[in-house]
Length: 272
Picture 1: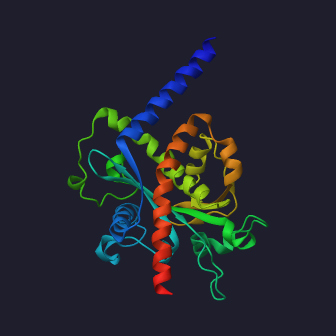
Picture 2: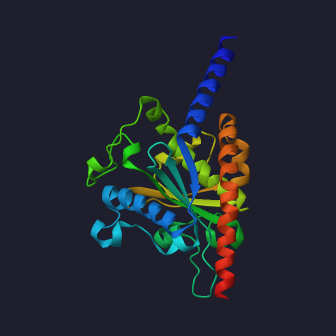
Picture 3: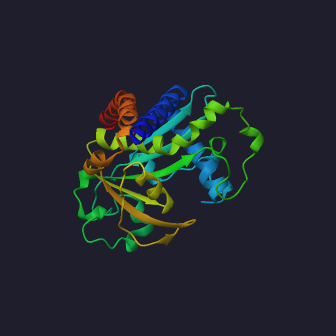
């Protein structure tokens, strides 16, 4: 009886947090160049100025982007009241398949020689079934501390949040992952790769997402490994308390994704 009551209280608490998060944040797919630049700016703040991914001065206009952005879908979580970009993540679709391009995903650029798995390898899986989650970033204003360096001007991010708002910040990690994971399903992809620090897969495993390590440890501003997850199986193991939140995010992103794909198709037709 007591255990059942504890489970019920836990579910109620989770529901309240997710409801508050939905009230406090928007889920957006970047469609226009302006929307994409907003994400690139956030990535520059986190990757260049905090992590030291590259010298900040080497990134023109304080933007962080690479060749894979052109064949990616970019997702942003925005704080409603302040209008601030809270976090972003991208879903990288396989690069156009050409004779001189056998590296389909970003993780192959950095760790091709460290991907020894005999079957779970981007080059050994159907081209249209693979994708990669990357460029995970949470804005400094929505974290308790800096990641590594503190070169950001704190006066620029000193926004006054309420205590109630701050309580939902812990959900940004899982909200970002669920956003991109929703896109995986909406794009009918199955085989999902990611280059991550070990702590992130451990954190996501608490929500029911069991990643398989498929790469050796490499040094890339910290120790990282390539991980893999099967989208179909992951939906079966997802924590039941997440399902309503996941469904909400998927419904919010579905029409935006259709708009993005329509824009890309129109641009392709005009160019051909």
